Length: 304
Image (tube, rainbow, N blue to C red; front, side, top):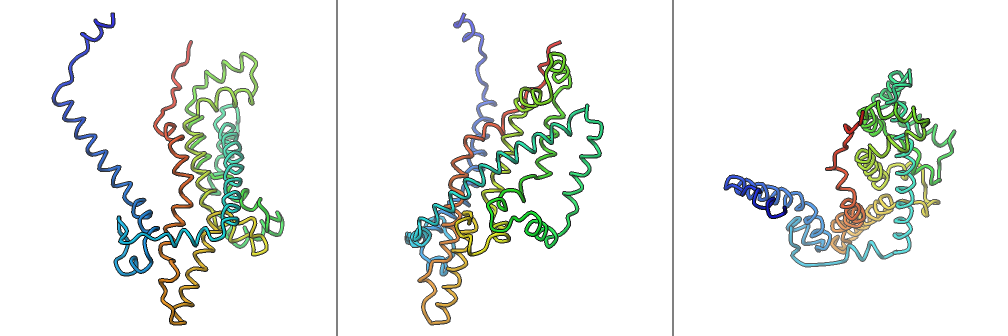
């Protein structure tokens, strides 16, 4: 049987072989082009300050120096604490944001909810018009008391309307027959949500979850607004690194005014070293979620 299958297999033609070679060559070139910026960042982070000032950024450093990383890790306790705050905020914010967003998307996609279009309009309206930064800041600090609190790093960006609309489109594409058959078996809304809607939206949940996690991981703006010097133990990674860079640039300016060579403070390599330190965990996480970006959701298998 297996031998018959092998004999029945058609040989690959020359055109197909040439197409595969050309496709692999083009994809390899595109992959290398996408990798070049990160290699440039990595190379610049281990370069000398004066080398960058004289020759600019290069793919291969003229002289290797770890001064930027030494300055970043000069206070490892604070850096590790900032990492811990960012990991905690990212994990909690991603779980809560994905849960609330998916529940709202399920309700808005349900045909049993009579006012789903009107409520969807209110969500969509907030993505076009906002109250402004000053009223938003006053509301968060005076009435919600977010000032100098870890809640200020989670709640302000917990819900994103764009991600809500993405998950809503995923759940709208689920056949209504699945929901109806579940209701005939006695399932309630929570059972349908957990047992049918979420499993069929794994690709959308993984995509939106990664977007939410990236928002939390890269967020420094809320820390700048709501945290002061007395709450340094709550500084997330991005804001902590931004403070280090600001101080390094101030040291460079002070050194230049005092006649000290500015290259003594590696501010340019530090920018790139900060990028490497901040993006490392995300690069390690992405391969585990990559399959959900290319895996389609099979919904059409509805048995009569």
